[in-house]
Length: 176
Length: 176
DNA sequence: GTGTACATGTAAAGTGTTACATGATTTC
DNA sequence: GAAATCATGTAACACTTTACATGTACAC
Image (cartoon, rainbow over the protein chains, first blue to last red):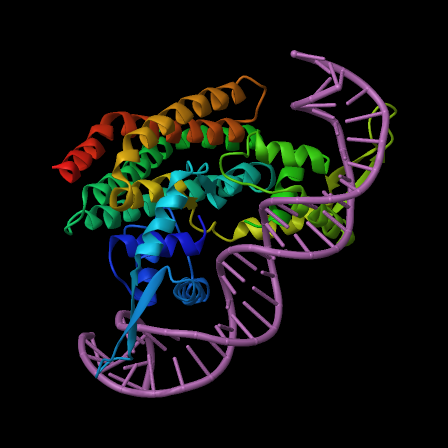
C-alpha cells in the first residue's frame, strides 16, 4: 500500500495534519503494519489536494507553527472505495532478526543466544506499548487490528521463549 | 536488510546462482521474511563480485542456458560477520489486509466478512506450504526460522477465526 | 541550556520494482 | 500448442529515506 492510499485511508477515519499522520504510522494504531516518512507524506498530501481527493484547511496557531488540517472530499471517498474493492495484496514481513539468526549460524554462532534474548526483551516492551493503545477510545476496527498485532507479538514471544534452547544446541554442535 | 547483504548471507549457507537466490526468497526458506527481484539480485551479485566479496564460476550447460554459480570469498565472510555484529533492526510488517480492514470499516463495511474469510483461506494454504519446507533436510537454524514462521501463521489464523464475528458486530452497528 | 514536541517542506541520493529482451526445454 | 522452468541481464520508472532548512515553546 503506497503512501497516497495510506493517507487517504487515515483521513477517511478522521481529519489530520501531515504531522499527525506521521505520528499515527510511527507510534499509533498503524505503526505495526505500515510506515511512511515526512518526505513521502507531505508530497502525497500536496498531490492528493491538487487531485481534489482531499481538501486542506489552514489553521493559524499563536504559540505553534500554523498547521494544515486535511480532510477527505467525496471524490476522495469514492477513490478510496474503488481502491479497497481490489483484494489486498499479501503481507510483507521483513525481519532482519530472522535473517541474522539464519546467517549467524554459519558465520558467528556465538552471537545466537544474545540475539534471541535481546529480541525477547524487545517483544515484551513492544507488547506493553501495544496494550496501551487499547486504553484509548477506539472503533471496533481499530480494536480488531490492535488485538491482531498483540496476538502476533505474543505468538512470537511464546515461540522464542519455548525454542531458544534449540539454537543453543546448534551452538554446542558447532563447538564439539 | 538490503539485497546485497541478503545475497551475502544466502551465499554463506551455500553456493548459488542468481536464479536460485530468487527462488529461495520467493518460495523457499527465506520467503516469509525477505524479498528481492531479479532486477535487484543480478546487479547486487555483479557488484559484490567486483568488490571481491563473492566469486563467480561459469557453468556451461548443454540443454540449459549457462549459469553463474557464486560463492563467498573470505573477504565476503569477514564483511558478513561485520554486518551481523550490529543488532538487527526492527521487523517491518506491512499488511494491506489490516489497512483494508481498518479503512473498509469507514468506507465499505459490507466487504469486511468476505475479506476475513478470504484471508483465513490464504493462511491455511500458506501454512501447508510452509510445513512442506520442513520435510527437506535442513539445518537447526533453518528449522528454527521456518517453525517461527509457522507459529506466526497459526497465530494469525487462530486470531481471525476467533474474532471474525467482532467485525460482523461492527457491520450490524452500521446497519442499525 | 539542552532536549523534546510541535509543524511544514524540499532536494539529493539511494534502493527497488516492473517491464522488457532472449531463447531452449519440458510438462500438460 | 500453451504454459512453466531454467537462466541472465538492462533501463526506465517509482518510491522512499536522509539530510537540510526554519522557528517557537515548554519541561527538566
